[in-house]
Length: 433
Image (cartoon, rainbow, N blue to C red; front, side):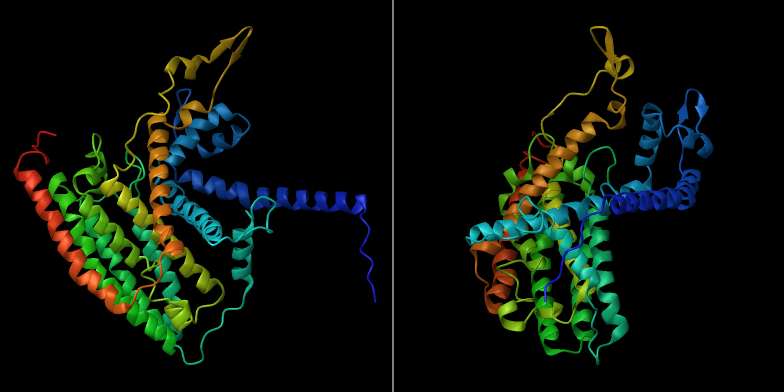
């Protein structure tokens, strides 16, 4: 029995557009504008034309882009913007999503496959969106004998811990960091210490053998590599004399610490791969041995949250490597600041004066910092993803041997090099360089 596809009718199409437009305007009027009004009452609004901008006047300037710029600049300086958009969760989630797509395409090329291709007309660009919709729509299945409160809480705690990690990473100069702590580096390692606990709790709460084996492996692996991870950054702390991540990045204005401490950078990178459970250190998941390790019993959006937290953690580690060893956001100016005269008066082109109302929205130095920071982070992420396509998984005894013996020994060598440079007067707060 064949079915006949319904014919396209212009009247139905126009009716659907009008219906959607009507409901969009209705929801914007009844929900959107009141919500914006409430938010404006909690913002520190700027002074425009000698008059303090209030929430009621703000609604009257929606049609004037040039008068919206001070309001947008005020919003960008709020803690909410830093936490939710940049350099916090939104920025990290965007880079994490791009990392997932690039990893799938890169592995496909390395293995002579196509990878995501059909969902989206250009190289499967919409595959990530379709996977997200699939995870949202899939049923969440809880094992019958699982410890349900802990099992439910584990993915949320994992994402929250990864987001806390992201909040400590500065992405540009001028205070573009969610939490700028004097002991930021200690806070980073304190937060990293929660990941093994969450992993073991989630694997134990599933009450299944494969997650439990994966959880035990993760505990051994993370504890083995956290010590060399901490020791590898002591050289940077010795030479900078600070634990503040922003100050560490600013101390590399002339040269990067990877030039003088390459052993520490190598140890940190290897330990970072183990902390991220990336190949060749993916024993806690090990699909060919224990199904999916401690992730075996997660389904639906619970699995999606764990994956989101994993790639947020990957971004945070890559950004931390950039801040510690690759100069952070320091780099040559790609574009100079715009002259104030052009911003205020515009440029005369014949009889027409071209104005650029969007120029004062962002500081050019901040844009330059973000550009170099993103380029460096993307480069580090590439080298984090690359081993998955070229290295096999190592045995657990080899993994522990690398962590407890080789990396710790190299980390102490790195510390001695830093102390030598410090006491020789070459580097450090009073060094000649």
